[in-house]
Image (tube, rainbow, N blue to C red; front, top):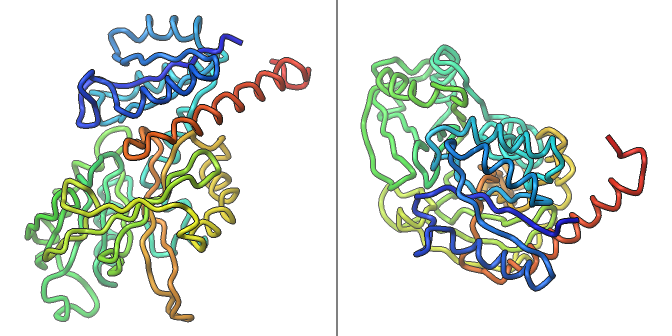
Length: 355
């Protein structure tokens, strides 16, 4: 083994420290060095893709992807390079296909009808699908529409019909909508027709898609973000929206208040996740679990039992941060070393696993 890991980052963005890289990447390097491993940060760019690829294939046992796709002008070249690295023996943490499968908003739709996600969730890939179906779901009540790619609440809209009692069987195209964006909780008013046309921008391009799901009123009690290290719950963040009119966003930028809890403080939620890990893997493509990923839950009330239930609203797997609990780097380093040693033993010892 080379005992060397490359951490990919992208230049720019609001997640960088004074030296230009993420504040929570350096602790991973330091923790790996304690265990006799080397690690380095490489800033990806399309211009240097060939050189980066050759260096990584020659030097590294594995890469860790810590690139927010939104920080790249186009993510196609990056994912292509990651696939080439995996094909040529570099362990992908995560594999690029797993990153896309878990991180895309339609991961929630793939889990609908399970104990984590209700049936009333839909994905749209064309304007025609959106135009034909969304007015029908809007008739049921307030909805949340999410663009596929984006961060910090950008392109996530709570959609309410003004004077909804006027409409019994159909929402007309000239109906007035009140729209609240999760980025900063600002509100706008558009007609249904205007909103449908506004959302065309989210449907364009290779990864264009919209997720349509019911708005859960208990978001005001807070969103619960579960931080996962592969199949282990390691931390829970309770994110309570700002106490202002129309606020439903759980981002720090919008004024939400964060509280950091240990997993044992949320036993029912941890039990729910542990029980459904295998199902999540199966539904999302049977890939190895990402190294670091998050699952965001919102409280709801079961209509039959009147008890609390947790509804999964989003999964993130591209560049999850842990700046507020940097000590997690020790667990990450242990997981990395154990995982790579295990893969090395299997691949070299057992002929059935040889290519």
